[in-house]
Length: 160
Length: 281
Ligand SMILES: Cc1cc2nc3c(=O)[nH]c(=O)nc-3n(C[C@H](O)[C@H](O)[C@H](O)COP(=O)(O)OP(=O)(O)OC[C@H]3O[C@@H](n4cnc5c(N)ncnc54)[C@H](O)[C@@H]3O)c2cc1C
Ligand code: FES
Ligand code: FES
Image (tube, rainbow over all chains, first blue to last red; front, side):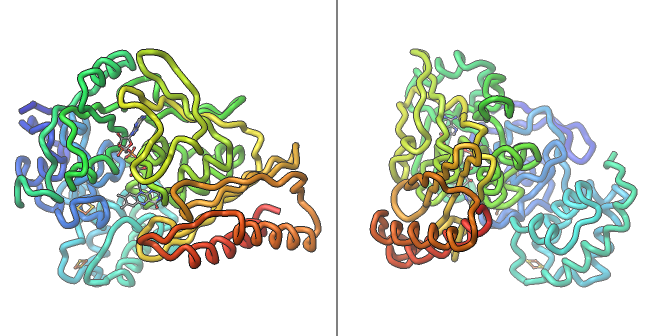
């Protein structure tokens, strides 16, 4: 066991983790962050995506120890970001979720995408979200939701 | 969540994050150790229990392995993640062949963890990095406590899981000439993101030499050179394409694999040649 310190959704946390534990396992089983989903466990579906120091990474393919000293953001925390909250509401308005299993990851990845490129067009959004899979196939509505949410990111300010 | 089952969780190991190459060499001396860069490939192999090292050496904290240099020869450190290459717009001008290949590897989220050197060291015949780097005639600097040696990237990947370095060696960086100012990378994939066939073209307008690398057909990228390629009238480009296509037909080897039959892969490669040459010349 090893102690790591990280800031999860703005809160300093100390977690005891095994060397062979993924960030996905640590977040779900030790930190109680359950919006981060486990599905393929091998980097293909993207449903375990979190922001690590502001960059989207697949937490099933990242070791927990690698997050030592870093910040982790997930859908739980993004709810308190004005822009991301707008994005989430846009998902709801556009019926961009069906069973909802993939939604937190798509929100995290779309948030990262819009922060970098608030003017994202269809092709940018397709490319940016290429690493995530929605088994319910809500892609068309998701495209509409992300485009509509561009208005919340237009001032170009970074997250707090 | 199930703990301890293969495909899902990782076998036990101790994690080390050396601060210098010397520290890393020392850790490798202990045996049964594996180097980890982005971990994208390594952790999957470990989950499948194809690899079970007792020590995992994370090389991302070693300063000598970071950084991209674009002046003189291009140099890319082993800890440089694909996203750093993608965000470097000067690389697009200096080495479009590599830049375009990088943009087609996996997806942007994988690319924010995975490294170019890791893509090479994984030694999978269908990966894009080695094919593009072979066209650029790139070399890898391989280091160990006994010193440093240079190996052509084209000779590094010998086949599935076969990398031509010793267990105590680390690839420190990749270098190539900045002369190949024109070029492209095109790939075709069907069921998986991996290329069923791919074509990299690296062209030096100064020398008139074009290097063509065809990936995925066989165990490793196959490279050939065209002298006096030049940006020429359409008829000449068509003649060049015909010549290269017949060379692919008769001069290159291809094997049946899980992505397609040898014959199908060759036909796809020929179609990719047309696309690539029309982009470059
Ligand atoms: C969903 C998915 C899609 C993918 N799609 C593509 C694709 O379209 N095209 C493509 O080319 N690839 C693709 N890949 C492969 C991926 O790009 C590679 O797994 C990744 O680039 C490996 O880099 P890494 O830094 O994560 O290496 P790691 O996983 O850390 O290492 C990979 C291997 O290389 C060794 N290694 C790493 N660095 C060094 C070094 N400096 N010296 C010696 N040995 C070293 C490790 O020991 C390990 O065996 C895909 C992977 C996934 C999971
Ligand atoms: S669970 Fe991480 S990518 Fe699928
Ligand atoms: S809404 Fe069900 S998986 Fe996407």
